[in-house]
Image (cartoon, rainbow, N blue to C red; front, side):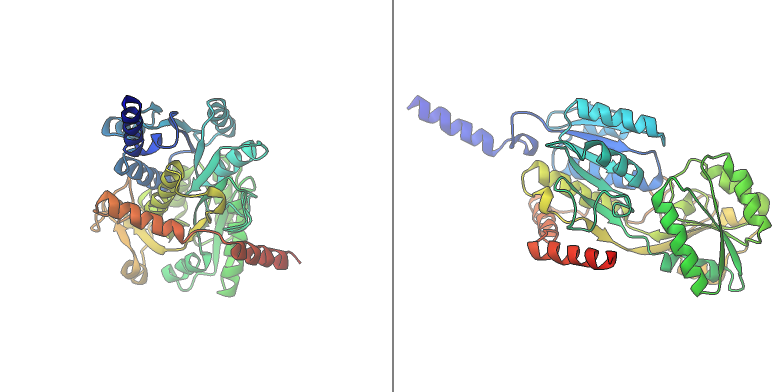
Length: 398
């Protein structure tokens, strides 16, 4: 009788165990891998932490430590926090640390960190699961081929940048513009592809793009001067992660060149105009959903499609325009998602989290779980989907 009672008690404890513990007596370990800080990354980070907290994987004290960019050995989950600070050697070091500590899941932010992490673990017999977010170039960097044509240990979220929407912002600002400059890095494939698309789209609009490269921040001095000497009336930047943001802006003031960045968030950082994907908090929410569902055993990463979305918006910074002695067109002002003036916006968007919707909707945990699982059910890859996407890839390669 006593043995039966003990068995029933054990089954009851398993039923009501914290979600991360329901799979095993060992706490899962998540490697949190960043290429560097940016407003884009901050939005996705906040979203994933919001999800982990609302699902009970982290408590308030652990959340505070993670907000402070510190690793935790938590009650239900361990997190190895790593920031590469835009340095390839540091990126390799923090990935090696995560591997040494047998991280179960890699959460990667940006294309650069996702690519480095993927190539570090792709040949393992049993690699950690890799869930990426704020990653625009998984297909052009070899991490995946299509949403359902990918390694079994990989999934994530892709903000789709439609340069078809971004390039026309140049002409919305100045319909008479003839030449714009573009800056990219040959070391970042996404930026190289971006400039190619920008050049093609601009040509179809009767606009010439003069492109120049940088390899290091100090190259910006010569690059901006080159573009100005070649008649650039503005500068457009593709998806591109670099540390010389403030220097570029300072040079744009000196030369009186408005700068269009391929992300609305960069308008709050000082860019004259920022246009592109506008939903990075939501991307983080979905990546967090994937992580939680994996930890709970609710999804198979191998059969979970990469999530893509292409929500577009643009923002304007009047402070930057004043420094550049540029008058923003009424067309841009009328269509902007938000306008920065005197360092603030009337739309309630902040410098730290430059999007409008940056909180989880209010609902019960049961309702949230049902909604989250329904979304993930729509991301399941069927054999037919895999075959169709592979056929499209094969046709494109011919």
